[in-house]
Image (cartoon, rainbow, N blue to C red; front, side):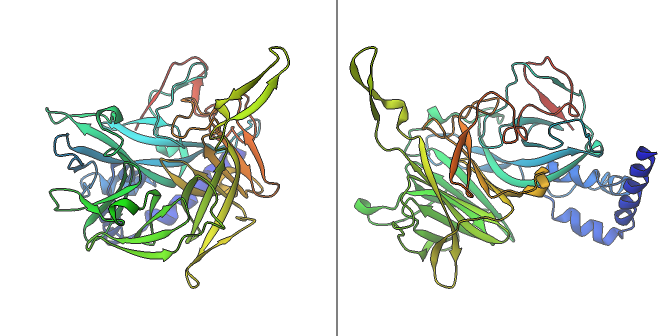
Length: 418
């Protein structure tokens, strides 16, 4: 009886959407720019799937970008989508009924699964095998964030994995953000914190002048917020960037009193812009080894997080304001992506915490199977919890994939077919 009731409820919800007119469906299709968007459109109901079958929207991605270095190869840019995936029906005997993962297209109707906090593919040493084919109609899926994946285009026009070793640290693209309007604009953070911009139709990247040669700003993060590009440095200085004129407009000046950390991340949440400032240990820790009877310098302690400051942009006063709570939200910050999720969407009663990568003192090298180089900061008590190999409330949303999504418990790695 329970299954029948849930099925009737699902049919009732589907009926609310299947009666939309073709004119409205056509307007929706025009706003889709990735194959993943099209798949989600087709998964709403049978009538939407039928409507989209003969119509292929103008897909922007993958987008070909010129190289930063004239002697290098061009890039292929594609979005990676961050989803909360859950079953249609609640499994009361499971620890986690949601799974947070990042999905990246790897081929025709084929997607790979990535670590949600990094650009690394997930490798599973001992867990389970995904079903041979994943039907989106079998799951609820909520997109909560996007980042962008760069690949090099080889001499044959095919995509290669983006290899940072081919570039010196002064010209490699660290992060890109995209604004889609009447034209496409791409803002790139590269090297030691310089900014470059590319607009549709440009043959080359345009380098943004951020100051005099001896006093150039080194930015730490970039974001597209409220359809505008922003960049922030480690002192909390926030600038808005006009991609057409390539001008910088200072929004917030240096805020060393509020930003005392070594890493800054910009996060959008509930139409507000936040800054997460990670304070890390700048010096090695010295301790006395009783067995060896000598002092030891622990270099591995350099860069380990000591605390966090969370600030919210006050547009009117043009300043950052420190906050002691982010309400029922959960922030996720890394060099690759930042995003915010409502705790309710994770099946939690409360949030007010920040997930981050870089527990061991280095970012962007998190454990492939998610865990050992990531942690969570709770604003309520200021505690920093490092992940270990055990599964608990904090890690269960990432790892391992829930039993409702896998078939057995023996697989080396996975790809998802759509």
